[in-house]
Length: 103
Ligand SMILES: [Zn+2]
Image 1 (cartoon, rainbow, N blue to C red):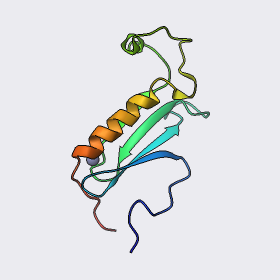
Image 2 (image 1 turned 30 degrees about the vertical axis):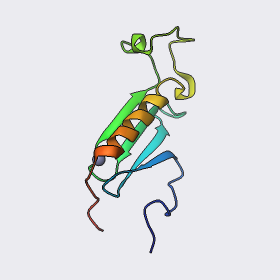
Image 3 (image 1 turned 45 degrees about the vertical axis):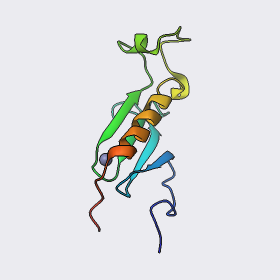
């Protein structure tokens, strides 16, 4: 029997959380819908319920939330926002009981 955690990860998945419902929350680094590569945002997607969290690497009105001096107005490699997406994925995985519909 193969479980979700044993199946091969898609190439662009950087992290995966197992939900209490047995689904996974996958995290991606990707380019925005209107901006070509290289990646400009970190996205987490729940394969159980479909909920998503997206944090863009460009700073704007939310920059002050980080509470420290920023090196630039662009978050290179998502080093500031990616931990926030990890937190969302972790907390979502702890509460989401949705499971994907079998194919
Ligand atoms: Zn979910």
